[in-house]
Length: 285
Image (cartoon, rainbow, N blue to C red):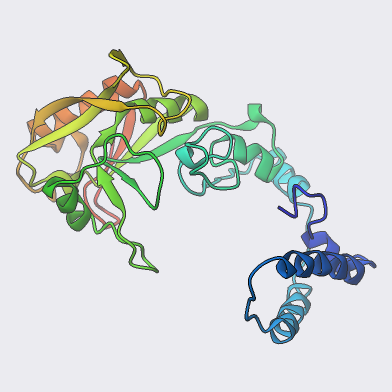
């Protein structure tokens, strides 16, 4: 809010001559906001002192102009790997608004976050689980409320690492995957947690939506406001462990058929397949 309100503090402000003035102005703004809210028990003097000490510690590090720093490395032929934060459907502009985060989580965020031009982006690697999860509220067309949903949650250890908060689980959603690939210009995909589906007698994919009596693979303006019913593609499960698989060709026939189906539907090559949490449990095509 401070950033879009044009009065936020930036790292460069820490070494500017009017940092304290900018800080005090911003502090007074927020104290004014708090006056209109129920009482908040917050030890501001104590926390402010600790924060200022941390500021002094930060000043010990060299400051750089990030956009020039990155561009200099690119000119020198260096490779730059940018990792996206959160999922594409949480993008402030193109996600499931208003159940989104406050930034661009798509490839566009690489340009705005690092100060590089779109044409400088090379490979775009998309990462997707073999099923679908969501944290907190928001639309989830393929969500499962039965024992299969619980099973996905338990087998996939779908609980927050810090809070232990359970993630909502469901079958993979093809329309959303195609939408995310379109927005990001994905060139290859990493399919993770395929092993979580090892013991399911059948596996499913939401291959399209039934919306107002019509079948579509496009996301509507608002998923939440529409009565969307997934149209399922059901396949036989492989009912076997994948530990012995060292390459894609080693996958059991039915597991390979599931991966081939996803690849055909999504239209982007699946180059990596994760069959477990270990570093070597990654099949590279």
